[in-house]
Length: 253
Image (cartoon, rainbow, N blue to C red; front, side, top):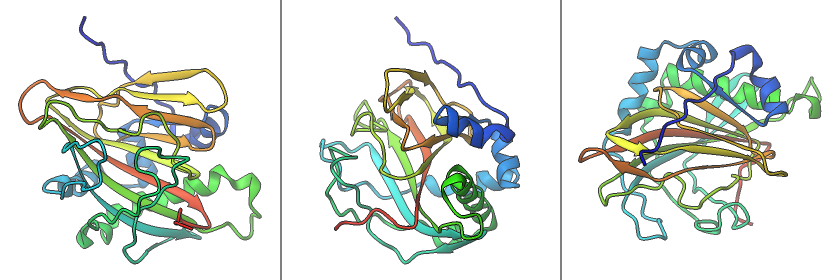
């Protein structure tokens, strides 16, 4: 039986914070992302060109060769995005049973991307959403700094299958997660699943539209994406994943 892609149910931009606080996740269309970032689709697409030619992920413990990626870190405070010196990505085993506990040094994102106005607009929108999500828990006069990590991912089908989340259904140990769909090329699969971290309810859908966005309250939901397979040779899936954690990055103790 051929799998049927379930289109995501998008929400109006005005409902982002409410949806995150009540449902734990929200999906925005590309048009809403453009309004959210105050940036045209053409300018966002210029960022997406840097997904080509990324280095292989050398840390995959399942022996796969299906993932290339880059990484960068930033802070957001009172409307200002600031780059952070290149640093390792680290997660505890409690959040990533496959790759947790590893100090992973990925190649940095290109300077021409992370210094570009479209990129800074995107991070400002994401950082402000993270602030708004926890606004009730923070003194209005002194919002906490948001520590943001950015991950460029390409999952390919060179070996016949690619795994967007080889660690399975998981949380990331942060406050807010953003998964941007950039491009799907000659693949099937890649269904996203979001589950209530404290219950049994869940939703599944397939992000298809370039620059559509899934935002997740990481404290409330667990997420995963199913493997992809090629429909023609050379199939791949490009995503941008942003995470925000209040006051501090996840660091090895």
